[in-house]
Image (cartoon, rainbow over all chains, first blue to last red; front, top):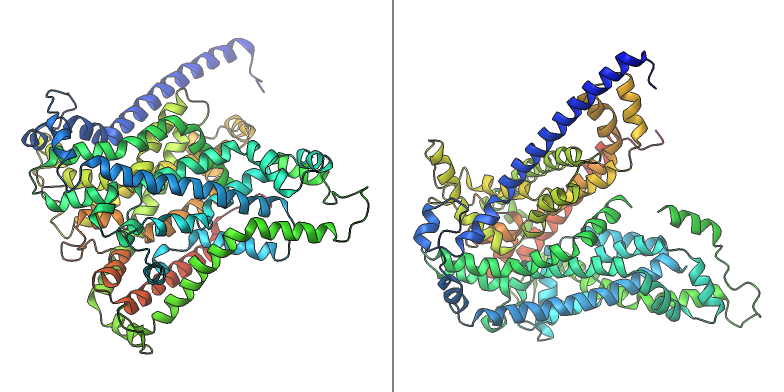
Length: 293
Length: 317
């Protein structure tokens, strides 16, 4: 591709490389500045969670210049129950949701990815359409149904639908993944006498660990953050989850208790941050596979 | 995906070759197995999705407060909407939010993805940092943070005071309250950015080399190579984020204390549905509102698909 005479070409290449260096440096500086701006509020909330409330309102810096641990101890007991009560409630809902999604969505995904059956194309299209269905359109009849089952103010309305594979986004994610697995292994297992359940349990599930991990992490984060369905189905303060407890905290306190409020917000964000650090690889891959097909 | 194509070619769907004939054909056995695997999903589709969807369509034509039986009222709920100022306020708020925040969010996502592409050092580090807000953005904790940031004594006003601008109470002012939520949505540009990054990786490097040989500037390369090739992914992100933005609830609920105030300036549509259905228990009207939302989302998506013919380029064109 280099058609110029050698000496001039070399000089130009060196100049271009220098320019390239400067450009990269500027890119890095720009990205760091922009990233710092984006993450500043988060870091500031973290630092502020150990500041006194009056100081939070005056001090925009990130220097951890005071250590008011009372924010955490006060915030922990500020509501009707100690905060670990709400963490436990959220934990139950999240654990149930993760197990339910892993089971139900992987089963449906296996059928869509590997088996031929009547109505497959239609069902697949319906499954995709339900990903986009707003929950608000079905929430009123669901509420009526669950109240007739006496399930309002229990965790069932938050977990049982997931046991019935209603989070179809994850079916889609796993279908995409399973389709990418070589079929030769299924064949080999079949020749060795495995039925469909055997193939699913012994071949597909073990090979799908990355997709299952993505499902588990996303289910965790989305359920942990979920507010709307928990707000509708849980009205008893004993059953409040972390988001509902925080909302109550905002309503119940005057403007002056930002310290404890920030402290409990940091506690609420902690598990998401932990899963983000541990599972970043799966998260990024999960988005990319469902996004690109 | 390459492996999927290959295996589909190499693995014919006649697995039972060479076995003794059985009373039930392999296709039918497979079909039966499929329905066993699909049972939970089919049950969920009926009980949790389809039946409630139909029921809410019926309730949309009734007066229903959960205590008495639904009372069929024809088109009353829809007529009521036409004269309902808060309904129109909710429509206006949601439309402004969707049509301002989604394009802004996608512009940031695309620009950052391009900046991160092409073997930049520390890619994973930057990507993680930019992606983190989109995991946290829908939480109550972040909405609480936003209440402080844009409050009268908040961090934003501190920063403005630092450069000599007098701030205001952004959340108390009806003309700025919605903007704070638009900023929050733009802040979560990380997940479309990750999708863009995956798409950028599919563009062959030779295209850019050829363009450089022809002396095309980076800007021209961006407009004439990157953007056209990415249009299907831009379209995908646009649809996904638009549908998501229509359903925004948590942040508006927390920031306004559930009211949608000040002066209904953050009365998101879903918040209004919630107020009607679960605060006033006017479930017939709430169902009618929800169905209108569904139809609007469907219509907007359909329009996007029609318009996409004019700007989305698939490889085979």
